[in-house]
Length: 120
Image (cartoon, rainbow, N blue to C red; front, side, top):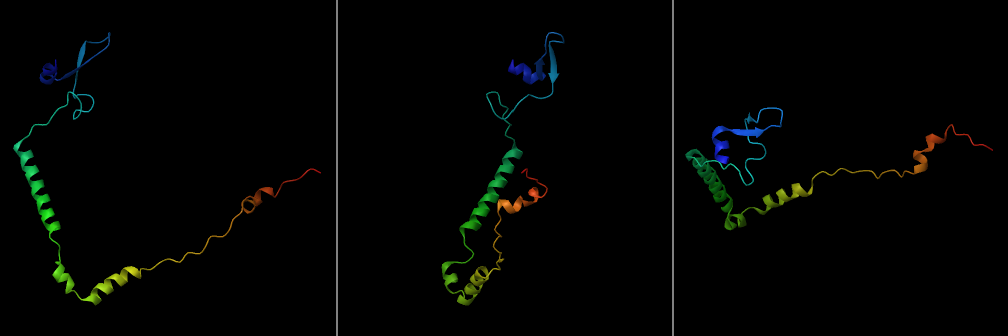
């Protein structure tokens, strides 16, 4: 049955009134998961793309494994340059904020009692 569906397309069964089967252009549901999933064929283009991605990843790992400065070069770096760089981060501008004013429910709801009359 699966071979027939693959060769002639996917057919869907209809109810009592109409024809027994009608042609459906795609398989319903997720075709990449499940018991009857469709696994893509491995082609030479797919292999080449994979090799290119692996080469890029290998080059990236090579650059990450080699630091820009070695520890010996870092020791000879001028101390003032390091202090200047650290100073810029410490002296970043900070916004001074005023404390919020105290609010009470009576202040917020005072406009409601303007036209209120009490019976005496």
